Amino acid sequence: MYDVIIVGGGPAGLTAAIYARRASKEVLVLEAMNCGGQIINTPDIENYPTADHISGVEFATKLQNQVTNLGTEIRYERAVEVRDLGDAKEVVTQTGSYTGKTVILATGSENRKLGVEDEDRLVGRGVSYCATCDGNFYRNKTVAVVGGGNTALEDALYLADLAAKVYLIHRRDTFRGEDTTVRQLSQRDNVEFVYNSNVTKLNAEKRLVSIEVTNKDGSVRDIPVNGLFVAVGRIPENQNFASVVELDASGYAVAAENCRTKTPGVFVAGDNRVKDVRQLVTATADGAVAATEAVKYINTL
Image 1 (cartoon, helix red, strand yellow):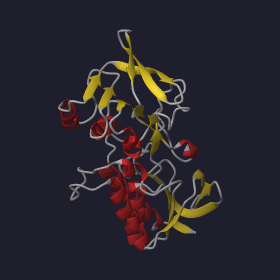
Image 2 (cartoon, rainbow, N blue to C red):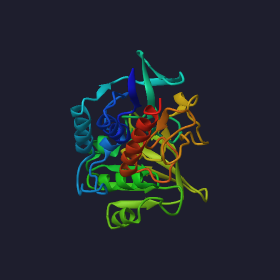
Image 3 (cartoon, rainbow, N blue to C red):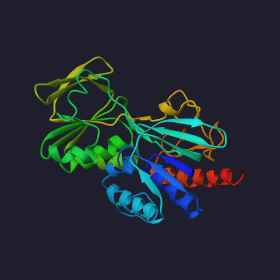
């Protein structure tokens, strides 16, 4: 039996592993895909203390190395359920199950889709959810980014260095993201803001050729683009764990700042929990708190 089973190998989960291992606990990290989470899609981290400039991939690699050097076990399996057995918890994956005294859910979130016709069919054929992954394919071409938060702004800024033209489409007349990034974008000659508008149609042959954009006044505009980058938010990956964690209306796990959930011995950390700020620094902070609280819980058993 493990002391701590961590579901999710992003910054929150890996930080939790560091703190749990430093408390001499036996730790298992279950990660469905690749360690690092969404931060690997960030080309340049500038707002993390002591890290003036570091890529998301480099940050994730250093974090994973730190975790494995402490002797943490990492298994690449997708967790599909957590069962409360009282003083123990069972984590069921697609290929097996593991038992631990505590569980930390650090599952993060997934891309929210636009919900327009042919969106799924055109993924990889002009539609993308990751500017840093796919941006290089659109060098010297015309692209659009849809969204109004920090991710959309950062995607547009990244693409402005590659593409000939970037349209930034937002359903409101002001952006939710940082003013500093908005100002940087406004100074780029190849960036055009399209306010009060939604993408309502994707026009394609074998690949995307243009997007239909509808303004809130009802006017419709067809914008020729080679690529569309969708950054309209994320969906927390908590659905499989609703039996042990209370979820709010948006699907985020309800927990106080101590990261404890309604089920004793089950904790949440990172972007999948209810919180006001979802940044790298708050994810790692959650990981530290959740692991510390898990150790406290174990010591009472």
